[in-house]
Amino acid sequence: MRTRPDQTTEMELLSGKVTLDGHGYIVDPEAWTPNFARVVAGFENIELTQTHWDVIDFMRKSYANRGVAVDVRHVNKFLALQNGISKHDGRRLLFELFPYGYVKQAVKIAGMKQPRAWSTG
Image 1 (cartoon, rainbow, N blue to C red):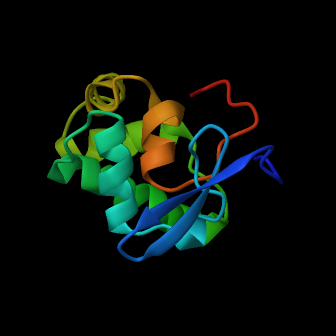
Image 2 (image 1 turned 30 degrees about the horizontal axis):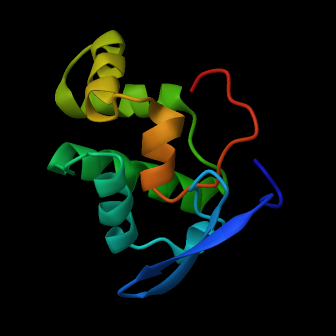
Image 3 (image 1 turned 90 degrees about the vertical axis):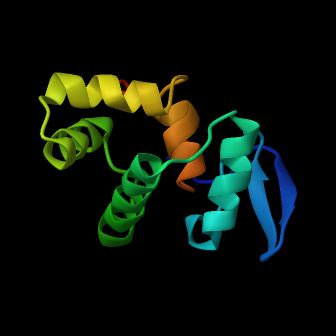
């Protein structure tokens, strides 16, 4: 994870201002709100469904327990178990939900910091 963003901007939300890094990822994951997720999803042309929210909730709970964004493999497994499908189909479902990728969209919408490097993303 990046320790300091190179450039920051502020996003004005109903709940207050949120600081973003130069790539649009939240700087402080503790400042995340569901409203933030809706706004960022709109920028990404994603209409959040219950399945999206299930993934976001799983990611946020994992972050709360571990202090880092959950690896995509665990999200694939979560989707597989939740939907009674194979891990392969869980991966396919994740990319249907977030077509431009886990890091590019899911991590950003769920309010995680931008990973410095992530080979599984």
